[in-house]
Length: 359
Image (tube, rainbow, N blue to C red; front, side, top):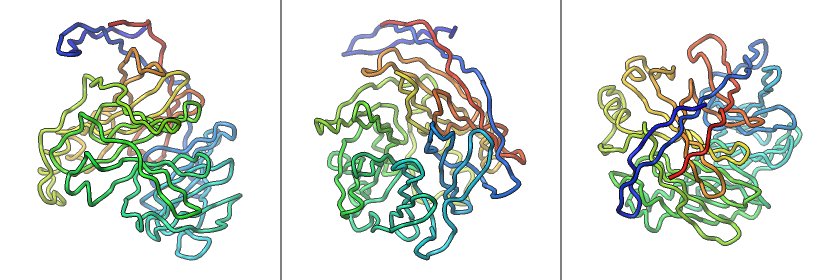
């Protein structure tokens, strides 16, 4: 049973007390990546999951390859060789599952969308630069001929024109068209144009995109049926850091400047679903992360999240995680374990059920 946390909330100008449950997590298994053959350097961002095959798919930006990983054996298979040829990928940056063994992979180096079916790249389509957008998120979602993803409109974002910028794109990759959707969160910081894009989750059953901006906490929803964007919930987690510092110039090579900015903000890691619950996960960098040159170990980084009841995001419950979050598999969280060890490991964790709490 989770421990209750008593918070003072504000609603429509009135203060009231709200009891928030703290959800415990339980480790129920895990895998170690097999290093006998193809080798990964690290996991990056959300993983695309095939529950029926027991596989996940992702992009490794260090070695610049897209891969398949078995959640049963730890075996790794790279999806295409590195290169610029018709059956190669240069810098794969996002992977979308169209069907089992059928993927759409955005190649940021070549600005193309490669269609890979049964292990072979069959065709490459023009990317997104001609539409004056930057594609964001490591994982895309396929729906009825479209790739759903987070984007940045650089012209509008640099001008901090959040009122008119669109954070989501429906990409008709076969016909070279893009439809910009969604609105910006009312609680997004207005300090600068840094990190002004969302992490998205497409719920096929609800035909809706849930999204949270990179440095924000408000959960937004874009409904594909009605073409309407709504603010669903603006619950701020206990550990959430509201930004106070603006990015000024480059902090590259200046650890002190990078640390000052890094420990001033919470960054979204993922939005996903388990059963009838929506979960949102963030990370807080601490001083140890910078002092140890980017060490993602627990302690150097705090990983935490909120679980909501769908469809209205009632009953928020908080939880903490022991490592980086990469998605869900059969109602379990996929979490990196033993960062910095010789082996890459993913643990399977369950969120413990808690009693209902009410306003």
